[in-house]
Image (cartoon, rainbow, N blue to C red):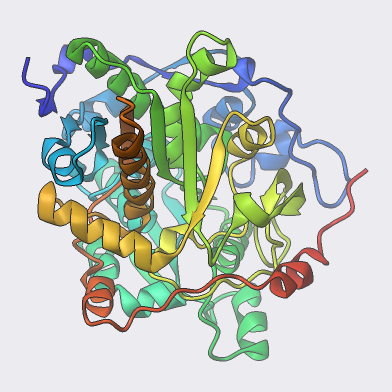
Length: 452
């Protein structure tokens, strides 16, 4: 068959999401209530999330059925294609076989609608008229805006200031789907006002934006909160990506020796790799799984594996994860979706167990890889996505040098059509690299909470 583009039919779409919790190589440490110091129960999360999502968050069932209404919306762009990157392989002169699972074909241009649609659906089923959220580079905010539009729900988004200013078209896309979008930190919340009082020119962070969104949602009788990454139920919804990919590799008569992608909170990479991880945990296949991140925000490679707040204002539960400290303010690099101080507990557990290998990359080498990709494969990737492409190119070059014929799968999380200002900076020679100094990490982690 033609491996350059492998499509599934709608009837071959997965009918259930894969829950990795029962297959993890060690027990996942529970979220902790910051006030009591005890593990969270469903009643603690009820002010923020619909009960169906709380149940998924804590579920130990290996499979959770996808509702029909969610499947109907998924069919607007799913199943997404699996491509063979022949042009890139030829350009590199590598014996490696490079594939990419293309999530840029969704209405919002990224993987984010896979969970946005599910979350909006469960909120609608419980009669919730309004959802509050935050967004970094804007992919999550635009995806949730789309999903809320589909299900007739109001959407309010707090967008990290540096991205709000630098990526106005993401904000306008949210507006086009009927959402309200505010720069964070804002003067609309106590959390935002306190940050602005300390630093009126704060570039913002995902931690700050989460604080604002959680504050608004917790104080509202008619609203719930939605998170685009990190939590178990979010990663669960994304597994449709890897489940489709497994079927497509069966069609191609191939199988990945290596999976690469980018991690900010961890949802897109979990989505593509979790369905393959069980085989590595069980010793059935020796798959190398590489999770990339920026050197400016090296959460998995240099962060501490410790309980921490998910937000700056200390409003969220404590999660066991790799963290740079909830007070950490990242440099305003262009991969806005990768500027989070923590990461998904499930992903961090796999890193701590040696199942997933983290790798930090400089943004200039990442953009170099993105340009190589666009000039061979024709797609302009998001800066976040380009981190995985960089790792894939590096590994393919190693194959050229050793003659090893590896099969590499890239989690292609989204396009870069709204990131042209960043590409302009790179192409004009004005982009600079930034590696986080150790003293900044030491200062940020000094405020980590004590958990017995």
